[in-house]
Length: 179
Image 1: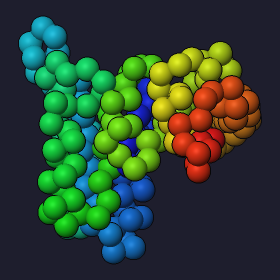
Image 2: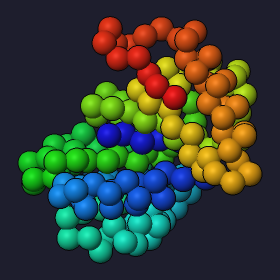
Image 3: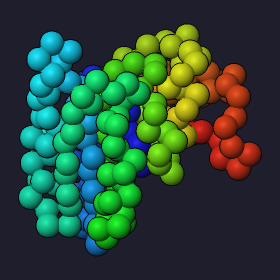
């Protein structure tokens, strides 16, 4: 599964919770988390693992943060090979968390079985939903953080994205993207 979304959408928190659910169901889970690299120093924080503290201690999980090192598209130059290595190593579920910063960060969509776009309830209006790029590549759009005071905005943005997705050309004859 590939996961992308804007900063603050809760990608790492979602992966922590989802990954724990999967390992409790006896799956072996690998997480490939991609962090942006500085164009000045070339360094990268690689901080996603620190937000997955429980999952990082789980013996049925493997978390590998990697820097983009200048590669565009939200992944690294070797993400596809890393997915294959994880599968070959016995991990039956591989989650790839992209940099996820914009409309063009969807290279992972061609590397995975399902591409999930994670959005916060205040993720924009319907015009954002009909932009070409990352939206039309998503197999699933998940509105995250949809609790408490954010229930109403979450339902509104869900309705807007359902409407917007109807305007986009279908990528598959058998799967209709869900919101």
